[in-house]
Image 1 (tube, rainbow, N blue to C red):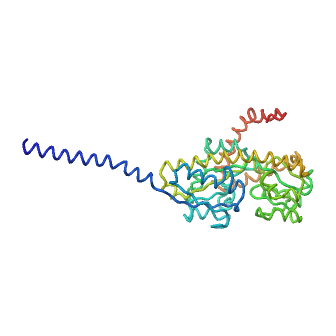
Image 2 (image 1 turned 180 degrees about the vertical axis):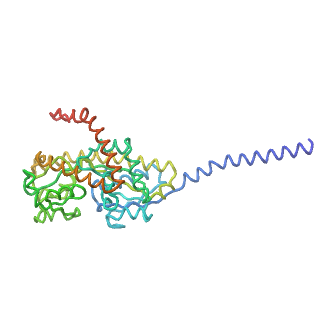
Image 3 (image 1 turned 45 degrees about the horizontal axis):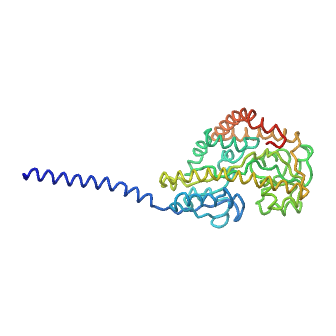
Length: 370
């Protein structure tokens, strides 16, 4: 073999070997990335041990366990309830600053800073959970939510839902709008603003203070969540008039926020796991809430002397009028809120036209078939 040919073959072998090394090396990079583990922290706005909000089916701790299992331990999230790492309502800042990677709460907690955040928890006389999910997942709501939080370095998504909440507990029955005037009531969010327009003195009390305040007559009425959660707090021992309709919170979304830098640092498969685990918990938490609320309401009415009934039509009509005025004023004061308000209301109208034919048509059949 000539020297030139021998040199050519030698160079070709080196080149081939180098190429093979590059080809074989590429999976090694992927393997290294797929073996990388992430250890994150999640804070929570709710107290240790709280069903739904902290533990149980579809809860934040359930979410953390799902992510760890689905990722094969590559993403581990340590959960901290309110007060265990930071105070209850400091999660927004903690995640934005990078102190922790995640927080579980409700978006309307931040409405003092970001007014439009209210629309991603619940809107009085807005949409039920099916409509809310339709808007967020398939109607453009999630993109608006992400856009709203982008300046804060946050990635939001839904992670749970209580379903429709109860209007609340009242020491005395309600017969007319006049009965609201002068009432002392514990209620948060936009509903509090609406009630205040009707003469209600709104009190903002944490969950642990509601029962003693209602029992002692410091407040005349209180709203919390629904039959299961309310019974657990013993609210039925302080008031017996339990009103329905859920006008103020026809749905209630649990919000998961993630630090944008931490999120961008996750491989795509782990991002997919987080999104799918959050959506699974969104479904699971609603199913759990509906199941336990049905049993709890039956027990409250049958065994605890609770009178459960809808608000009088006159009161509902007046609350609806004031709600529309309040929402319009709030939207007009902030361009971002106006944009989200208009988008939400347009989708609500579209969803309502279908729901009137589908869901409401079926519900109106009655006879226990709903």
